[in-house]
Image: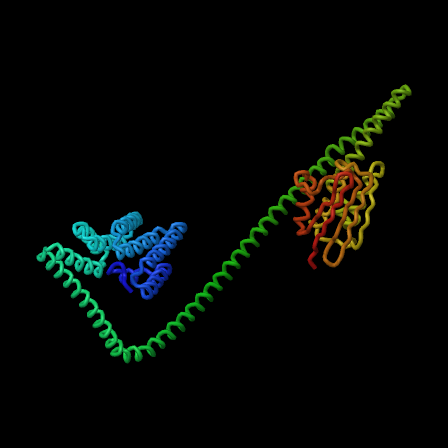
Length: 465
């Protein structure tokens, strides 16, 4: 195959582009069949141009420059030096924009070869010199040697035999250095093979030792890993134990705090109830006795005065009863003397049946439980009844308390106006008190209510055996 430029083999060694290889294969096949047929050169240029257009569409500037270089090579063969130079200058411009030093050196060399064929030796020498400057920077020794060979030919054609001989010596020097480089490479290769063969026995002997070392290191690594996992496991267990202890202590402190608050509340209730009973209750009783004595000592009272006095005495008497009821509610003597069943029924009986009908059902509550449990359940029932009277406006209230194997289950249902139990903002102090007391007993409570449908309070208190 006749290549357009003498260094094109180096280009093929350096870059591999399938499109250009196929193009050169086509050109080779074409040249072998048709020789110097001008029509076939035109077809080759046409195909290179088509390849260039495909590269332009793909935005592949470097491939465009290769097409221009190939077209210029054919134009040089056809002696169309002006067109060849134009294509090569365009190719050089693209490669300068890409800052591809290797291909820039090739472009300058192609221009120098083309100008040498044209007979423009001044330009040829200028381009070849520029090519060598770039090739020297990129250590492209083969291209430099080719350029010096071409420069020697250019100087010889100009009749400057001294300069031609100088360039020839440089070419010869590069050729020798390339030869020495190849010879050194071959020597290094043979020496490497010799050294490899020499060391095979040592390597073979070392393999067993290395294998044993690897096994030893692997065993040590496994032992270290197992020890690390064991230490980590102990650490995790220790940390989990400490966290469990901390959570237990926090819960214990919370229980103590809640218990203290509940006990303080009960003590305060008892103190107020005692004060009401012993203080205001005694004073109200004394007032009633004085009014009765006053009525007995007055012999000449008109009918109106006698009626008014009786109303006053009756009012004081009613106040005494109400005071005793409040006092008993705040400090239920029935709970102190009797079981939870009796205390709740006694509380309900004192409510009266004028505005609220209360139905109580209990099962297996006759035995005595822990005093805190009885007090808290009693207060929960009190709070539910209070909410039904004060907030719900209920007329009926059903209370059910049942002891089972797991604890005490209770439901308190009224027919009041209800509320939106899904809205936490609606929940008032009474419901929070119920939640707090049930939580204190380690139980669960649910509120089921909606506007106009009444309210159901369901709870469960576990009892340890």
